[in-house]
Each structure stands twice: as structure tokens, then as C-alpha cells.
Length: 83
Length: 156
Image (cartoon, rainbow over all chains, first blue to last red; front, side):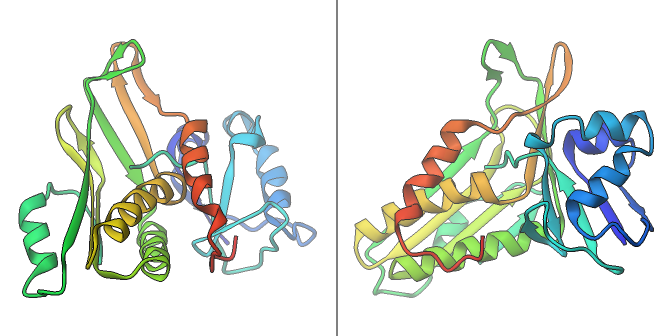
């Protein structure tokens, strides 16, 4: 699956997107975040406070309990600040 | 209609284009958002708007459709810029047109309130201390929440 990071999440992780293949027991957005968190300091810093992390799957806003599967585009970002 | 673009826009030309030859339009409202040179007590040299290509357009289309569902509009337009902008530059334009003023006024404010809390854009301010990502404001959430009383078709 493809992961996109935006704003300060992108700065902390250090890249804007990557292809990931988490283990089969990772079944939802929250599981993906938990798995990412263990991949290094940047990830740990990015996901230290999940109250300021929002998610989209295939360009639709979703909660952390939303299921994910191969081929999905998952985006993780802070609350939006446009306008 | 919605547009997400790097370039500046001309509000008057956009308004003329939107109203066109439709003589049933009796009211047009517009909102233009500008880059300020100060945030709190810090001076801002410039601002960079990041967005999520694809999803940003989809969300803006959805927000515009919701405004057209709630109010009888003859026309509507949202233009939002991305990239680096300096103080005084235009960031966003919303125009609504209707037969009578109430629908145009209300839908214009609704579009801005919803856009600020739903469209995937993020602001990075250049300050004397370096780049700072802007935090979401509770006041913006409260402003968007005011419109929640109306029945909504969105899936959230």
C-alpha cells in the first residue's frame, strides 16, 4: 500500500510518500500507524500525539478503525489549516 | 466550479465570468482571503500552502455541492491557491450568486467555514525563528459547527 505524509508529519518522517508492506495482522489505519511507529525516531516523533493526526484512505477522511488493504492509498496529516 | 492553482486570480474577472449573461441573478457575494504579515505577535515573511492533489479537489467539489444543496444558487466558484505567497497576496476566493441576497450571503460564509475545516490544505509560515506549521484553530471548528444543524448528505 502507498502512504502519503503531509505538513509537519512529512517533515518529521522525512519523506512525502512510500510504499509499505506491513504484516498481515495490520488490518486498519490505527494498526498501520502502530507499525510505522516502530520504524525509527522520525516516525516515533511524527506519531507521538495521535490527537493531532488525521487520516484518509483513498482520498476519503476516515477514522483510525477504518480497514486497509493492499492497493490502498493511505494519507496521514495534521488537522487542516487552509482558507 | 472549483479550481486549485498556484497562480493568482482576478476576483472581478471571475465574478463577471460567473454571472455571465444570467439575468436571473440579483445578488453576488464574494470573499477573498489574503496573507497577513503578522500572526499573533510574530511577523510573517511569507506563507506556503501545501495541499493533497486529488483529495483537495474532491473535498472542494463536495463542499460546493453541499452549498448548492442547501441554498438556491445560480452559480458558485471556489478558487484556492497553493505554493508560496507573500503578505498581501490573495489565497482563496469564494463567489456565490443567487436571485436574492440571503442565499448568496449565507452560502458564501458557509463555504469558507467548511473549507477551512475540511479541505486538505496546510499553512507553513516563515517567521524570524524559521518555518512554523500553523495549528488548527478551535474558533474555525466552532464556525463550521454552526452549520451542522442543517441536514447533511456527507458521510462523516
